[in-house]
Figure 1 (tube, rainbow, N blue to C red):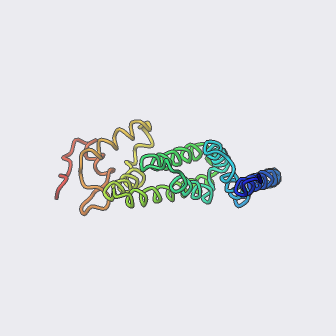
Figure 2 (cartoon, one colour):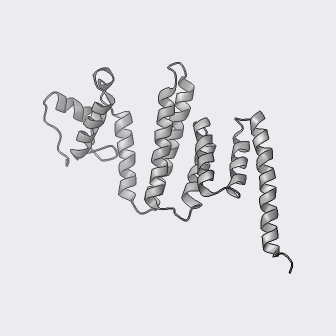
Figure 3 (cartoon, rainbow, N blue to C red):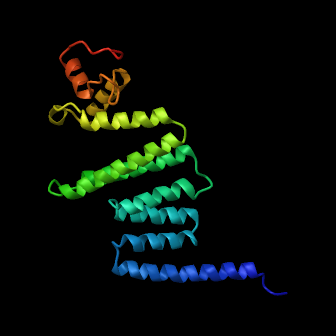
Length: 212
């Protein structure tokens, strides 16, 4: 009996992909920062590798190129659409991991490397907005809005004297206190911001009511 044509075709395709991967690997040795080449390599690998191998390769490339908007965007697309095990919780974890990785990279930037830090922070904003869109489309509109509120309050309305006499942990604890107080927040009419809340609390002043 002859070979099953479908088996032969699959075998040929696998062999061809292995050859392609070998070519991509050699090309990357000479052009390790070419984003299009990296993405083509990973796309080819997706047709050959097991899931864990594919994710390991993506993880490796993202660590080597943490400020690549294209790679992060394609990785998020991959995790949202290409796995049968996909769930809302798992996808949110992908966004969280991406932001944590980028935060570590931003913190590693030297003080004089302002441009690189700004590029990474811009990418973090992009990923946060992607996350909020995903959360909203998953039916959690209020949560998506709350994420935006929290991000703006924490980054743009942070008490000015924090940089001088508060640790990161103290900043977070103070922000949690502000958030749990349920005073008006960014985007709500009459909101004064975390900075004003902290100033009033620090001076023993009356905190504005949550409802005006």
